[in-house]
Length: 475
Image (tube, rainbow, N blue to C red; front, side):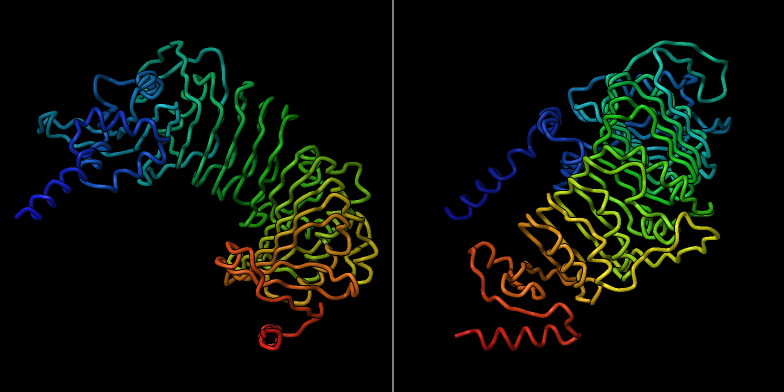
C-alpha cells in the first residue's frame, strides 16, 4: 500500500510541468529557439496542444496583405503558429460551416524568426521573384481589391520560406520590403522559380537558396552580406553586387548545369567575385569542367588569397578530378583546411564536348607531372577525406597533399562505412603512409591499438593485409 502511494506521488511529481497552465508552458518554451521549441510537440498531447495553429481566413473582412504582414511582424512574448486559409463564399452554408483551403502554415518565434511553408496544392508557380527593401511600400489587396498604400515596418530578423505560388508572392515581397532589420533570408523548394532579384540594406547577413531546380538567373545586392548558400543547378548567370564583405559561399551544384550551355566565361566571372572569401564549399565537377575546357587556374588574373577552408564535393575521385583539384589549389596560397567529400549518391555528371579551349588541354596523364606542377601548400594544416575507398587516385591525392603540405598536422580518411584512420608521413620513407585505426572508445581513452605501414599503390587486398599485420603486431 505504501509502495503504491509512493509510485503515485512520483508519477505526480514527474507530470508536474505538464500540469501547469498553458500560458506558463508557452512562457517556458519561449526561452527555446523556435526550431527547438517546436520539437516539444512530440512530448505529449498537452505539449502538442500548445502548437495548435490559429486559423487566419484571408477572405475574412476583406483581409489585405498589410493585415497579414502586420500579423507576422508584431513582437510576441511566446511562439505563435498560424494556418492561412482561403475560403470561398457559399450561399447555402453559414460562415461558421465553411472550411477554407489551407494555403500556408506559419510559425513566429519570440526572437523575430518567421517560418512560412506554403501548400503544395497551389499549382501555379512563380517564375520571377523580385525582393527590394524600401523605406515604404504600397500594398495591394491579396484578393484583388483596389490598391491600398500604407507604410509599416517590421522588426523581423529571420525569414524562412518554403515553396512559392502567385498567391504568396505578394505576401513575401511585402514582408521583405517592410523588414528593415532582416538579417537572414532562406528560400527552399521553390520549384519553377527561374529568376531571383534581391536588393537589401546593410542588415542582411545571410542568404540561402536551397533546392530550386529551375533557377536561371540570380542577382543579389547586399552590402554587408557575409554568407551565401546555393543548392541546385548551375544558374546561367549569378551576379553578386556590392558584396565585398562576403566570407562564406556554398555552391552545391549537384543537379549539374541544367539546360543552359556550360560557359567558362560566366563561371570565371562568378569566381572572380568570390576571390576574397574565406570559406568555400563547392561541387568538384565545376572545376573539372573548367580544366577540361582549357582553363589553367594559375594563369588567371586573380587568386583566392584569403581562402582558408575548402570543401570539395563530388561523386567520385578519378585522375581528372584529382588533377583539377590540384590545379585549383595552386591559386589558394593561404588554405589551412581541406575537406573532400565523396558521395556516389550525387551521381555522375558527364562532361560536355568543348568546341574551343582557352588553352591546350592540360590535365596531366601521369602522377609525376601532377606532383611537379602543384604548388607548395605552406599553410595547410588539416585534411579530411570522407568517402575514402582506397582507390589508387585517392591514395595518390593523399600522398600529394602529404608531400606538398609542409606544415600538415592532421590527415584523416573516413570510409563509407564510417571507419576512420589518421594518416601521416613516415620520415625514413616518403613513399609510405602510416594509418592509425581509431574507434570511438579508443579515441576517448587516447589509446592507439596499432601502427601499420602500407604502400601507396596498394591493391584491393588492403584490408586483408592490415588484418594480418595487426595480428602479427599484437603481443
